[in-house]
Image (tube, rainbow, N blue to C red; front, side, top):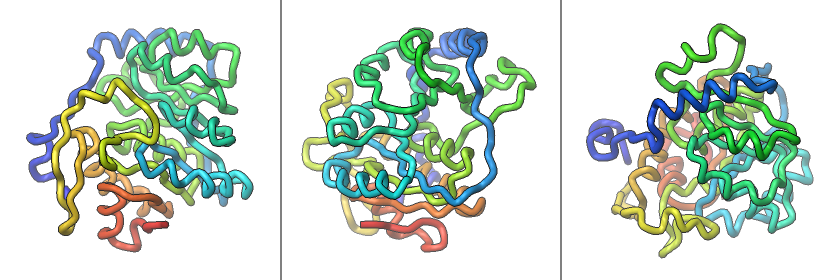
Length: 265
């Protein structure tokens, strides 16, 4: 099992955007007349949080059933486009990355509400300005000093948009949370369920969990490691986390306590 004992040395956290840029983006976004994400009381609704791992390709019929049952779909990055192609409209779309290149993920605005991190580039807010946008804040060092004492949810739970989307769903009151496409590893040559050329040159390493070997980038492995603690904390807070699909992270979930996380089909 991947543990945190030496992972910070082997897989260091490295932000893809300079802190100065992040804080400039935050200052720009908080000046906008947008609602801020708040913490909601727990309720009986269910959420499906959709990552972009290769196993997502085979899960679309299950996601259609989630929609039929009235469960809320949270997409991120390229998954909104993939879901739209399968006839599934996202209830929420989450963006975390501060780089302007992330505009490319917004070529198909197939979501009812856009949950955009305050660190995102101003061009993202410009594109989405006519739509239903809610601002949310990460637990980024120093960010609290920028946003002041205005009441809001401060989201942590990991360094990836996938894990922070799970935390957002929890903050919005969901206690039944299903994860799809959270493979955190490759299937053959594919690291995603769709084309994502910006990751084509990522270096891939081998990781083993209980005798099973997986190929993954360092950020994928870190997500799998961070999931272990994040899911335990959410379980302690009353959440039921269900992991669907295959890959490094589902394999880890399989060997965690059944009181913490369940492995679905």
